[in-house]
Length: 249
Ligand code: 13P
Image (tube, rainbow, N blue to C red; front, side):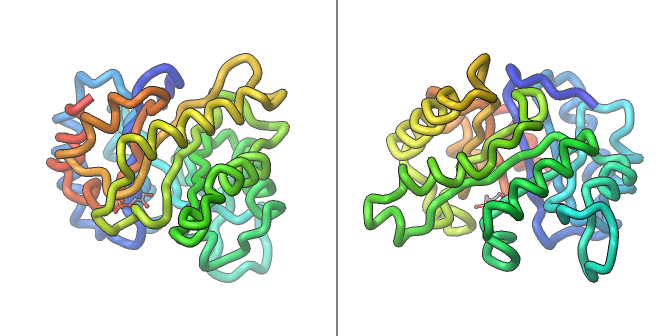
């Protein structure tokens, strides 16, 4: 596993997609990215973590889980803990994706407990923040994101185990990418807010943008100040599109 907070990060969140047959495409992707110095991470469904970890050993590709429960084990039907993700060979986990927040607990305690459990199990966390269209139209988006960030910084956080992804909900899976100005302004806001915390006083974590990123818009998004990578949904399912995004930096 290699993660350098000063390199560009390309993360692909497969959501509820993928079958064992897809390992063939992962082998092709690994060949295409062999010389790349970026952080490249795929988040397949839990069922594929072990096989993707096996194929990607000794390559530039890292594997992560899409969420974790805050407890280590117990009577939580359908859930997966951070230690189980680590046990399957993955090194990363996404926490607080808006699709998970909408289904399960939205409470700040839930998010912070998941983050702590992930860090205790040596997983690097991609923490998602993002407002819905109602919050944005009311002009409350900066306050909303500040609050989500405040609830996402744990005493266990540092710039080597934490990545923040700004994913405005209205831009996810809609084809409506946020404008360059929207992304620039929100990433500057996130950067300033994190700098003001004791934890990140010495250096901020990597900040990613997510929401309808594709091979056509990735280059421009990656050139925005304070954008150090992208969290890609739909376009990461096709290995050649994901590779085009990686090569667009
Ligand atoms: P899309 O790239 O499909 O909009 O999804 C973004 C996302 O939710 C990644 O976590």
